[in-house]
Amino acid sequence: MQRYDVQWLSEARAAAGYAVLVALLGLFVDAVGTGLTAPRAMAWTGLAATLLVILLPPRVSVTPGRLTVRSLASTRTVHTDELVSLRWPIDVSERVALRDEHGTHAELDLRLLFANPSLWLQLEADARTSQGRGTFVHGFPCLDRLAIRIEAETAHTVFRVSRLE
Image (cartoon, rainbow, N blue to C red; front, side):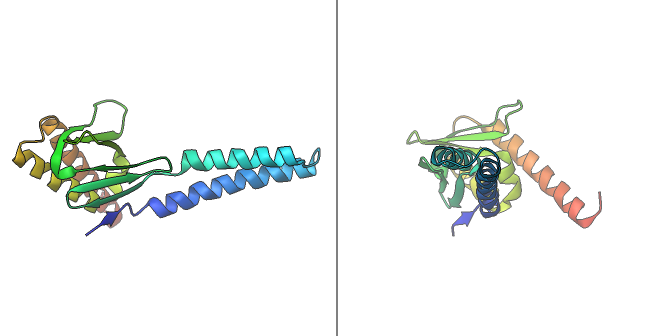
């Protein structure tokens, strides 16, 4: 069964909304002010398109044994049941880096895993499968630390929603 990032659609809509807002405000200011010209209209449209490209989040999906990250520029599929490494640096970075036996790598925002427990559960199960096969050689402590962090965040969310905190 394929699982998707449940927040992607709302984040994509927000990115598109911001881009349209910038374009409309720019066009409006130029039209009211000095007068709108074709080069200025193209510049505002280009700026809005650039903003959309920057803000549009990658589309993440997980199936048993596969994690696919689709962005505007590329699509990466990591074989999560053939993981070689999982890295989650202890610093301000909130990104999890995955690499499989085929050399494919992908990065995930930690907030994505907090918001999508089904994605995390499938990823963790596949990582444990890789560990059992002996391919997963780098990242046992990171996987365990990540599991503890996600479980704590999930519990905190349940308490907050239940108003028990």
